[in-house]
Image (tube, rainbow, N blue to C red; front, side, top):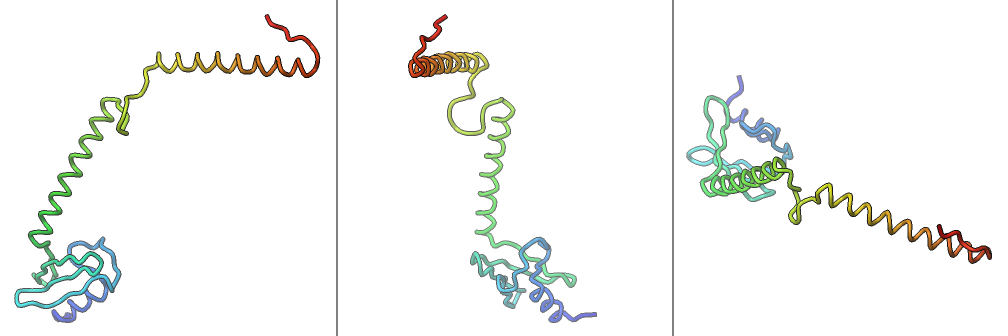
Length: 140
């Protein structure tokens, strides 16, 4: 059975901190320092400090109070954003800010305008081709 220092070394060496096994396993990212009441884990990437205690052979880490408040604030902001996106999606409005999508009638009107424009344009092209060839265009 491994002793507590051996278990702590194993945790540090593998980069795993309980209970979050999904965290990065970059060995240089975290540093663990013993204190009177447990351990302090330093995230060298973000500078965050986490308080850890050993209970029943497992190292349990908890966020400091100011980190927890920032985490909760961020979580609340993201929840509001998800709610806004879900209500926007449910109402049929586009997800991007701005004007709502055009109605079917507006789309059909725009297509009709483009169709008339293209017919006129290609009619002019045919006239120019006919002038180059010396024939008179058929205007019916």
